[in-house]
Image (cartoon, rainbow, N blue to C red):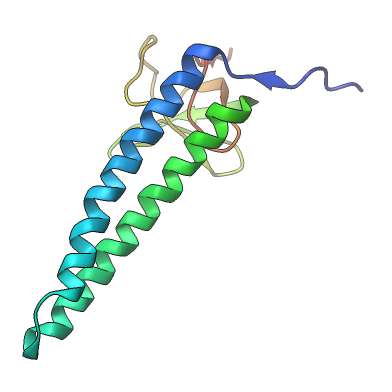
Length: 142
């Protein structure tokens, strides 16, 4: 069976993914600068706690930069995947919107630009291959 042509992300969503990635990189920089300053300033007994706080902020900056790199990959490569059976979550407290059958999650770009999801219902979703950000409106399954 021929899987057909690969799914592509439209230009509008590629630009939105790039914008979100740049926003995340900015947040990462806002975390990295104080991390370096906190870890390198001061001396004496307070030096050790400062280094610990600096390392914590540096780890957060690295994570945010990594997440941004996923958005940049999708914006540049434009590759999408489609999966059926994604379940709309009851709560979006952690930022995730739907759970895929394999247990991973997908999310909206920053907000839901389409109709609200019905919690507990199953949807077919199209999302960026690397960032797992929805790039087309979820289609409710029967």
